[in-house]
Length: 253
Image (cartoon, rainbow, N blue to C red; front, side, top):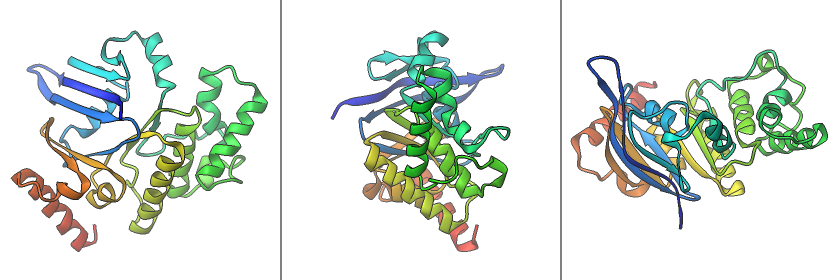
């Protein structure tokens, strides 16, 4: 299986004196793989997602998407690379003044020369894929939280990306809706054959959807393993995270 994403000693510091939000992370992800990045709040997992999703640049280190080091690319070159990526944002990030169909079409209109008819066809196809075949004319304020997540996913897959990034897909959802969104994400993975990277604080969700789990702690990658073996890692920080998640579940959080 070929590599699609490789990180080599990636660091991101902020401020003076410098504080490391990402502290020398190295990680390789294969095509078609599903990797979940977990960790406590403030651990640096969202910083890492922003770096690999080209929303930020590392202070040092290399990030390869295929054979291209995206850490040193110009903005023009990155715009072309971003067509190979889909991003599902934590709070959906839909444009309130645009219909659902216009939101899904946004990337196609901005970055491709497809005709209006082609775009309408793609929008209809992607909305049907996420279970919203009749939603194109609706406005974002008419949608439930779960529907907004689905529209965000339809927009992310509109350009047929090779890799999809998810930022806290279960955030703000109840357990039943979280399970439904997890099922949808797994379905997309299988139907589209894409690579997926999800950042989540929800360990149960990570275990349901991912092939491998990577844990970030204080900006450093401290553990990576298959979903089946991850719970057996003896590192106290990993075990403490599991205990915290278990206590939250018992408390109904």
